[in-house]
Image (cartoon, rainbow, N blue to C red; front, side, top):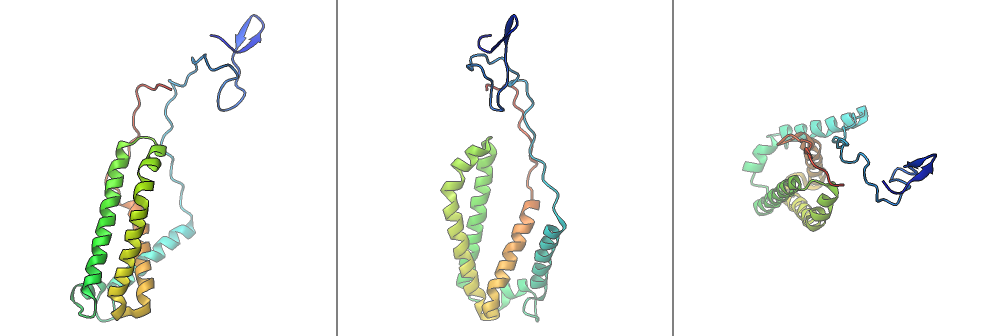
Amino acid sequence: MSGGTPVGGGLMRQRHSQGGYASSGDDLEDDACSKVPAPFPVPQARTWTETMENVLWIASTIFIIYFGDRRSNFIYILWHDDRIRRAPLYLGMVGVFLNFGIFSYMNLLAWGIRKTDEKLEVIAPSLAPLVTLLGIVSFSLFSIALWPIWSFLSLPLLFTLFMACMVISPFLMFGKFRQPIDVFRTD
């Protein structure tokens, strides 16, 4: 054991900061290898305003889907109404499915990478512009497709449907998150 602060008849290590010891760093017999890795962060409880906002998005989406154009529901209108422009609708759906495929690919890729820093460095910068562009193009195509029925109301309608998908998506878990068990650590 070299380095440290001389005390009485020997040397004693002292911590001067959270980052490390006052010694030169050549005494690495601290307990870093025996520490239990930190668990995943516990999600914070939602406030009542956040909960009410989420309920409002979901309720308004249910209203849109159920009432549609006051004569038939939204799903029936998408499948059978001749006023909808079919080419932009189908291209918008292709864009949404491509976005879903990219998100699935990024999720599978992220499962193989352990550290969150690596996830952000590897995955996010390369595909984020593509996902954003596909989202904007899909939203525009859906707006063009639905414009003959709802005119300017198609924009808030689509935004409401989008926000409901964002509210519901965290609850759609396809697998359990497990903390990786590191038997040997080399830090």
